[in-house]
Image 1 (tube, rainbow, N blue to C red):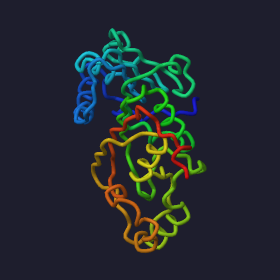
Image 2: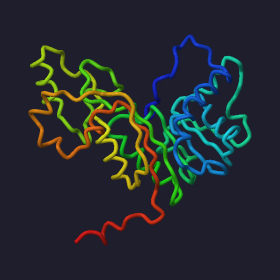
Image 3: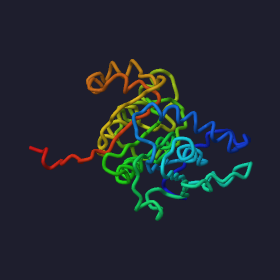
Length: 265
């Protein structure tokens, strides 16, 4: 199995996956993407974690992109109950495999890269590599729409992460979190993806992206006890970044990447 894990299926296993169902799912996602000022028409696009391949179909048929690619570790698009093959649509290409090594993807350049619900499923050590890969595949001035869930220490949650996996950009250690839950008589963290919105945004910035716009929905919560005990540590973070439960980020690759050496005094 590839190191880059697929996203969890969007629907129950017994629900029929047809073209009509898939296009409804894609249109729902498109309502979120369409709010951003991105020149979609005529663009070359890649959907990372494309699941059944319907967003590339929608982008090609209804939005008017020039070419729409999708990639997922598992080729879900081969199991349509009505026999429809999204990859048969003119201008749509779907790739199955590890995005970091698939030979059909390494020389591609895109104007827009999208992802929804997939970054959070990756092993922690791979997240930075995948985001950097997306940045590299974009043409200068290209756009990315990065949607991912954010979590602030949910007790007992199963969020696709192996407990033994190391933590990049961890705001609070597992030890601190488990002490917090023990004091409240709650079970320890069983499997936690250690990203609040603040750490996701830091990761995207460190990859080189300019963040054009960030939309957040819902509440992940921020325990008052941790805030009181570690107030100085969290003071620099925007409270909205700490408390939102889902972020959709419109990011852009600068036309002229920052010359870090020139900026260092």
